[in-house]
Image (tube, rainbow, N blue to C red; front, side, top):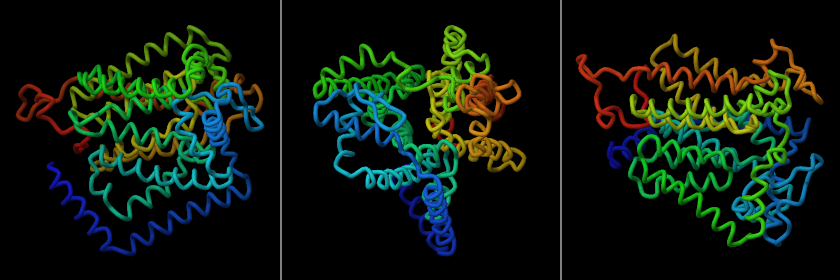
Length: 423
């Protein structure tokens, strides 16, 4: 689709949507009701937004030349865990009072959620929905109550911003100027997006992979130029201290290591986690490569890489799984023309909304004593992630036949990356 055709499609979708003011009003009312529900919850149980307090402290340390990795804040004694480049980005948070900053954080995260839904619809081929005036506020209102998204609001996290940055960058056409650079910057803020550079490499997009590496190195260099001592401390010492981030065995940790530690009742699983993590990394990147090369679906390759990164990271808090938003939209796009298959995105939506990990007993050290029959409820996201990777590997076990029963069509001749064919 050319740029002119795309602009025409967007204008038509917008015109049709605003031609039904009742739908737009209903969507706006739903969004206001969601925010009202959030406000009521805040009155009953104030949102701690502890991470935004940490970010503000990092910005203060960066601006004043203080000890970036020597402080702790909040009643939980939380330290700084991000690279120095992130601390530089947090300096503007010091310009506002903490109360104002929390309000701004909620509003910005709401806008980022709407942007993520928009980007996810475009990547999944649902371009009409992406440009429908009533769809975005309604989807934002409902998406706010997905557990990973809600927890992002609760803690004042940056997950939605990083997900938008990566998804926007990798959804651009191959050959787009500086494709990969924004992904590299995201890795300079939080290390896990670095796996997307590997995905670009294994799918043959060497230039974009090198550009992602350049973006990451630029973030490291900038952090070193402004905060040299903190940079040396982080990259030679703090990066290896997983314990600074938190306990790996609590239910908050929805990574493969969290699943294994709770299942084996071992706080330090060692090789019992490292070996499965390496195998999962290889299988996840293999699935991402195959769905890209055999189906031409770059959006699913990106999703497989995101899920792989969340699985193999030593700690993936539940709010890191905001990638559930593009996953659910991609599933909806794949199943929208088959009534029987619509049960799949409905079930996955239920899993990301049910909050089963908070229902199992987990106070104190009970996380390490969860009985076997409660384990799936304590680790829903890593189990879903493993199931997704297995399903993609099974689905791509053979290349699709070309029309007429001939040999498979070359990838470049198949469906454009990111589109969602009829299921």
